[in-house]
Length: 209
Image (cartoon, rainbow, N blue to C red; front, side, top):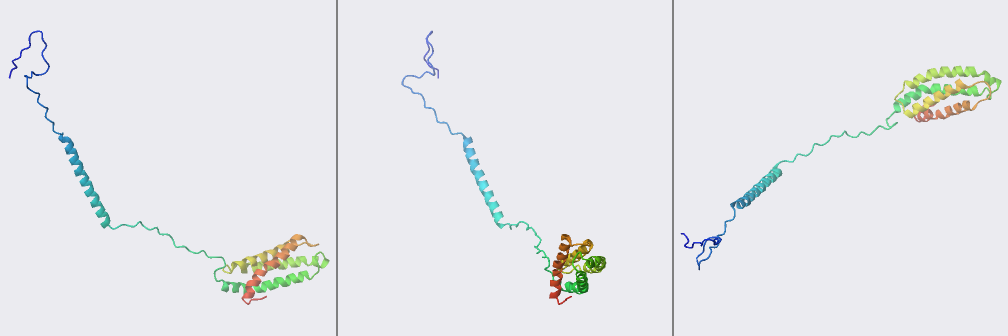
């Protein structure tokens, strides 16, 4: 419909459409909310439902699945170390005692005979040194192999027996004519202490010399 109003020349046209007197402008119609937001909300709900369902399924599988225990580490059983002297060495000790008893008695007799020659530094004692040294040297050659042939004897027995042999050998090899020196006296006294080990073991087994 064409408006009957014509703008006179030189008069600017009024803004907007011409509205007859007594008429009113039509109120703008409300626009519908965008569908995109509604679709996002709906999609989020569906996704949450799917995740919850998946979590429930995983939980059920975890409950029904047999749990596998971690492999146990096999450790070797503890073995108590054998204490020195804890083994029963009675038989080996008795054999060694019976084998060395005559030689221990022989050593005691030779030593007593040498001391009975007189005090150290006297002519008789000095003259008897070579014979005493020869006797000890021969004695060591006979008793050492016997000790070596009994490795199963009590360690204490073997240690003190070896100490007695060594001290007797050292004393005989070091003595010289004249007064006794400190080293000779120490070697003699130490061999008397060392023989206490074999004496203890053998006399408890009824082997004496």
